[in-house]
Image (cartoon, rainbow, N blue to C red; front, side, top):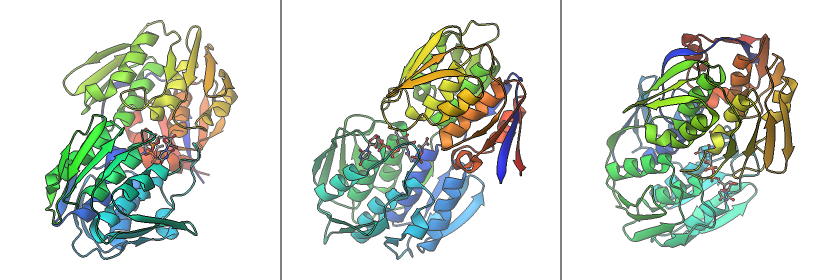
Amino acid sequence: MEKLLVRGGNKLVGEVKISGAKNAAVAILPATLIAGEPCTIENLPDISDVKILIEMLEELGAKVVVHDANTITVDPREANSFHAPHGLVKKFRASYYLMGAFLSRFKKAKVALPGGCKIGPRPIDQHLKGFEALGAQVNVDSGEVELNSAKICGGHVYMDIVSVGATINTMLAAACCTNLTVIENVAKEPEVVDVANFLSALGVSVRGAGTDIIRIEGKEKLGGCVHSVIPDRIEAGTYMVAAAATRGDVTITDVIPKHLDPITAKLRESGATVEEGDDFVRVRCNGNVIKGTDIKTFPYPGYPTDLQQPMMSYLTCIEGTATVTENIFENRFQHVDELIRMGADIYVEGRMAVVKGVETLKGAEVKATDLRAGSALIIAGMMAEGKTKISGVEHVKRGYENIDQKLNSLGADIKFIKE
Ligand SMILES: CC(=O)N[C@H]1[C@@H](OP(=O)(O)OP(=O)(O)OC[C@H]2O[C@@H](n3ccc(=O)[nH]c3=O)[C@H](O)[C@@H]2O)O[C@H](CO)[C@@H](O)[C@@H]1O
Ligand SMILES: C=C(OP(=O)(O)O)C(=O)O
């Protein structure tokens, strides 16, 4: 079994370059199936979710040319399958974007329901509501979603919940439809805007991405494009928190500082120093007194749920008490027991965790149950005295490119080991 071995106690110091955004890449790659010409996608993160998606596109008949670890060209013209069975989609959740992409391209889709996830039930009712509003017939049977429509005719949909996935999936489904589609109460995440920009580059008219209402007028025949994926604000936020947690001094480059505002604000509130440049942020904590702050997760531009777990590790060694409230997912506190095993003082009441600062954490054997539990435990391991062994590293590889190399270049001592 592969594990991560972290020897704690080193301050992170130096400069780290951020990769492309996982949550944009995992939507844009399925969206290439809608294109009428080849698409070159640059700044793809070299992570397992992207590798699986590339294999998936090839299995569906698309031609993929890999130029280097971060750039590929997808020629979707010979893709001919609208069926993604369980065997193909079970490996990661965002395979649900194949539904919107197939529906747009083939006017039908048969896609197995995405597998369960450790952070909560994660239903897809709003995705299906979007497809129905555009004119699709939806049938869920034996674990597969079947979508059919003689013609996707556009429509008006008000989302009951602000959902990144449902917003993007409805956009994908509407992309080949010449009638107007209006989607209200949509997610405003930067990744939604990146997908909208990708669709625009194919020839779709997308207005309002980044606001509450998106209006789309598609085209039956779309072109191709060259698109560069936006920087990963969650990876960037993880390094920001790691810098503060180890009381280090790290410049995080190739980022869009505006996307990091909620993290910058909370780090500053806790006493860390954060400087912003055009495309970098620098986080310093040399001698600063780090105190409690209250974190509440919300859809963008609120504090991101994907950085709730890493932030909690940082908050374990503050002066005073902090609270962390998880409003998006019902079961995103599974890292708490592992942090307690490392000496943290945390108790959970419903959606809120109360974190009482302790002097220091101690290395231990711990388990990452999901992606951000993994990065939270890596941060805790770097803060702790002694050795921390983390299992469940396959989750970490889903979302962090070369995390061992990037952290070691900043002075950490972390390596993948086989046991
Ligand atoms: C691949 C990807 O982009 N993943 C991100 C995406 O996940 P994902 O797109 O799955 O998350 P959503 O924004 O859809 O989920 C938000 C909330 O809405 C609920 N919901 C969602 C859809 C639906 O049809 N019905 C429903 O009830 C979910 O259970 C959750 O409570 O946004 C999350 C919230 O920022 C992030 O944590 C994930 O990293
Ligand atoms: C929950 C996450 O991703 P996914 O939706 O791909 O599981 C995440 O990136 O933290």
